[in-house]
Length: 554
Image (tube, rainbow, N blue to C red; front, side, top):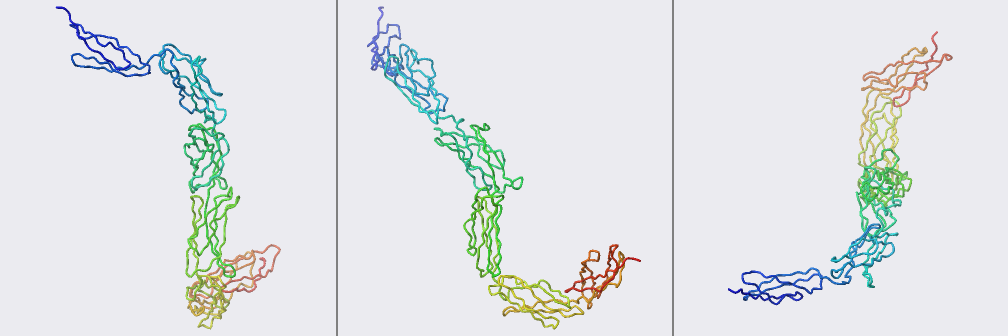
């Protein structure tokens, strides 16, 4: 049988050239044909379809590159657009389409910028672009650089720009810290370090401290365009110095990476606020005064302001005290009015985050009926006695007069007078001789109120007796005698003004006895003989012994 052929219709989208139809020979299932193109874009997509017996099939075609005899430059791109001085950025010159031959490009750069290529730049045949490196070195903080490129023989330039900034390692803080002294216990102190240039890029600098008490962050970000570095430095409250009088010393190190220190700065740490204290007193006119004092751990290295706050308007304090440079404390005195009732006032001193407090009890004035007390309740007969009356609170502006009396005829009193502001006054009275322990009640009257205070009168000293004669360096015996029998042990102090006269400091007369003996000795120099001496004893009043003649042994 003769061979037959089947006709298949072929179509394509615009730009793709195919025959209008092809024949498939009998006995075959496929037929190959040529697909042409008239594409000019770098990438063009299309399709080819075939139809037979009313059925159509299609396939997609992509033509990625078109070849041009002499394509123009389409773009020049520099990336990144910001670099550090001395490093390189990448420049890419692109053609509108691939060329059928290599194309020479001419490169031009601004001053301080160098293209990394020997001679001109070539875009090779079948390549859409050429890549080359460009280096820029900023002589100042910033260099605006431009790269231009054109085809050889053409006057049409394409350009792109980038920025070269100073090298961060060469732009480290290099001047002295603006604050080289910080105080312990304050909120973080910002120490500002100056740098000679302001970079156009943000960058981290790394920090270190040579003293474990001085805490700094491991790194701090320096924003673009800034010529200074703020470093928060913290020292805990209560940090003390190893050697009194010295500051805590530390080096603040700064560098481009951890441990790669470029510069070191000396920092001194002051212990800060040590204490605050309140005290009260009255002057001779009874004026109430309260003193507030703040103290630093060491002498201030600069005028240092410490804030003050009082817990009660009764004590009006200034808002702050300034510790002058070279001093370690500052204080103020305030005159106040006596409160109607006892009032506790607290003062708070604040320096940074350090706070120190103190309290003081400000008493109201004495009122009749308030408790009073005697400094002692036992007295010895046969002389003048004295005791302090403690009224417990300051006498008011008119003072306080206390009149003493007793139902006993053994006592004779003088009135006690308290000046304004005083809390204690002397009570003086004469006591007659007593021969036995005698309880007595004192009546202390102030204004219209009377206090009954019990006291005890004991037998006083009747005599201190020495032998008429004694031998040098040979012990002698003396006697102290009371006016009567004491109900308690009675200590009697002995007093000698001569260093050669050795006696006990006191003699105890036992309860129920009227006298006690003691041993003494006198040492005479070799040139002395027949010395007359005396000994004193004290019990409510001073008693002097008889004369004793001391001689050398025969």
